[in-house]
Image (tube, rainbow, N blue to C red; front, side, top):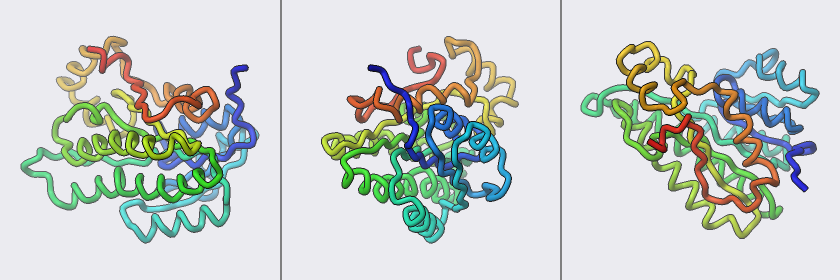
Length: 253
């Protein structure tokens, strides 16, 4: 019997304060999951995401953490695991992007992007995933990118981090698939979020991007509700090490 009921499941969603992360968290809650949300600037009292989740009758547990700082990351992990010993689903979504041509891409740009998009992602997967392995069950979902497969322009740090995420997904799946932990990723195409604002306001770049997308439109954050629920549910029990593109057909061109 097909079952997408996530009732009694607890999902940790990083970068849940806006955009794709917010829609993923709401989608999981719509399927029945309670949500742990963490972002660098998440309002711990009356955030929009908290109101949305609670309106669905689900619980929302907010945290703040700066993933550019190891001390903040580990402090969050220790507190979160203390508060919630069993986390069923980890959505490793938090990310950042800094644009500058490669010849001008400063060390601090590179370091910040790699720290948030790759280092923090691995630490979270290791620390939460090890508990999943001990229980023999868990779901880890990374937010990858089209630049997991392509190089992009003026974003060398972002491209390097997302390329590495693709390999990390497969590496973890190779080790953990036989231990009950599904590790997969979702690669968004060109989605209307603050990360793509610079592209959308550039008439030439925007026109070139839309001309290549078979669906002929920018994606919307809500397009990620279905994919994340699928990968978090029993429907994907035999799916391991896969990166699902949600891109309007971009990678098919």
